[in-house]
Image (cartoon, rainbow, N blue to C red; front, side, top):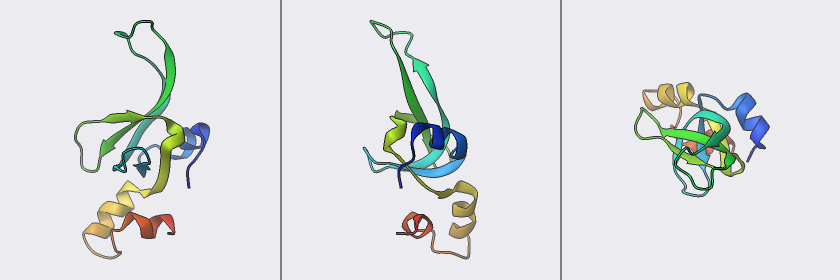
Length: 93
């Protein structure tokens, strides 16, 4: 289920999500307006900032391309016992 940008921003921080463009799964860190200081011409755009589970290099995507999967905390707990650890089961698919 993709969420509108306001829904992702309001409910997604710290949640496990999938970037539908890349297929990558990560934790939603932030959704908001971003202006690349090196961009010419400078323009503002709304971005979702994601990072791999457990840390690593963040990436950005359009918030419309983010699908909420579940809680990152739940996912970590499931991986260490109890639950399948499969994000599709958390998303209800």
